[in-house]
Image 1: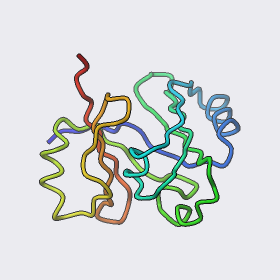
Image 2: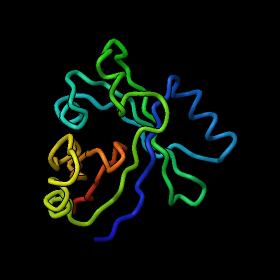
Image 3: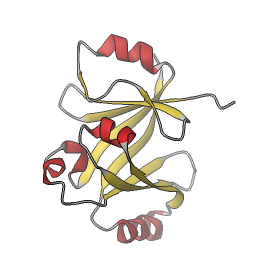
Image 4: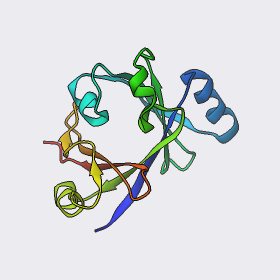
Length: 146
């Protein structure tokens, strides 16, 4: 099974200040910004009523991505104790070829947060799990667009 690093996710307090830092000192540029909320993101994180602004930034080669995440509803105290919602580096995302096959191979070995699910925009199938050392790993299979 081959894979590649898709992005590293970092939860931040101030999205704009963090973006300006990575832009000014390291040359990252904005690729995609989105507000994520609803049943898909809730199922990925295992909580209800999540709202997070995500900002994907590319390095100068346009090959490597950092994802900044700013949770817009900090009143979710339960979520703050979850690995995914704490500030700092929270997860690594890997692009894989056949997420369903990998899920079947791994589901008795690691603890999945969700089964592979199609993203809201329909471009990917995604699943999160806790790795061997409790680190969060996001698997993403890019879907063919018709």
